[in-house]
Picture 1 (cartoon, rainbow, N blue to C red):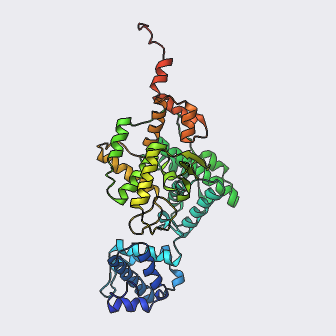
Picture 2: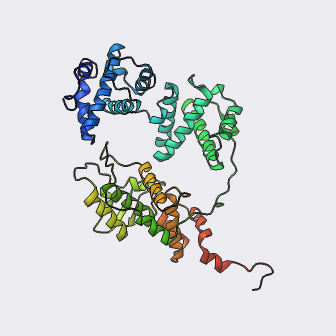
Picture 3: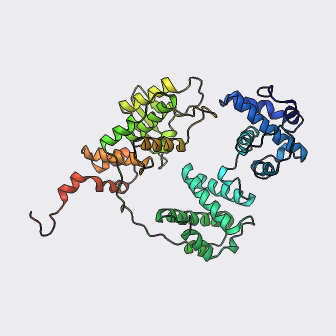
Amino acid sequence: MIGLVHLRPQPQAWLRRSVLSPFAERYCEYLVDTGYAAGTVNRYVRCVAHFAYWLTTHRIAVARVDDRLVGSFVNDHLRRCTCPDPTPRCRADVNAALRHLLVVLGRCGVPRFLRAESDSVQQEVCRFTDHLKDVCGLAECTRYQRGRIIRDFLHQSFGRKHIDMELLTIRNIRRFVTHYPDGCNAGAAHVAGVTLRSYLRFRTVQYNDQVEELISAVPSVAGWRLTALPETLSDAAIEQFLKSFDRETAANLRDYAMVRCLSDLGLRAAEVVQIQLDDLNWREGTLQIRRTKSRRGYIIPLPEPTGHAIADYLKLGRRATTTSRAVFVRHYAPADLPLGTGCLHKAVHEAYIRCGWTDRSGTHLLRHSVARRLLRSGSSLKEVADVLRHQSIDTTAIYTKIDLRSLEAVALPWPGSKS
């Protein structure tokens, strides 16, 4: 059996005599196929053998293996484990090994941020995020953010008790928004309030709860659009930023291609990681953006430097055996899976550090810089809105604050100064 041949007799016996025995071969093949080294495969299989011994000891059927049971084993059993040696007890290794086991068993439906919560909170948040997807059409990152907020609200309001809207008071609602999270800024409090209203309306639609008073009690957070000044990078700073990528490794080739999409095209991080091979039209020099914040598709020109960066990565960095249709994939186990936005944010943040910009963060800084560059080249506000794919030109209006040439043309003399 792959990965099991180097196991000691006792862990092998634990696994083969357990309810997990029919899945052992598939588990090993899964780890090998996703790029894990032989030593890691062996270590993870020993962790699963430990779990199998625990299942056998407690007479737990394989049908009961889920996120909650794995959490109980990792958080409770490992702390006071007295299973006979050799038994792996490293919490990080055991947790990682069993998360892969849940994938093989098809039991990984609960998001990670919900695994420590009660069944009632898990089910409620999943139903709410499904509603946000199917009815409201919100993007995945927005659903994730709002799911976490409602998880915290339900945990604070009910703990592990049954969720009952009749137990909620106006005081509960106001305390949550005004204190979530501790020390939050006005923007975070505003998002918490919007999310809470959305959840209460969901309860009205799904369960016919009478929560109109609670909805009206959600405090509104004062905020004014267009008050902030967009931070941008100069052309020299952009050049320094791009030169910070050495492009000597496959990962750096990939990261460089992704940041060129940010700095040349003004794409959002979520749009970059969702680019598919079929979206690139090399003959016509275009890139299709299928899923955007506005849920509309666009076809945009692909600048030559950006195209060269993507082509270099595809030819020199991306594995020829990769089956994923996503352009940007993982290079380390689990390999060949599409990247998440977290990897792109990490690559950008590390580049800022290499440039000595410890006070800067986020990928939107590059998007703002694209708007600045367009305005300085003489583009109109409508043209900037088209490039950034804004649905309303009011969204683009914030960039008028950094269009110094146009501001100088309309500025009036200071009272009392010489004209």
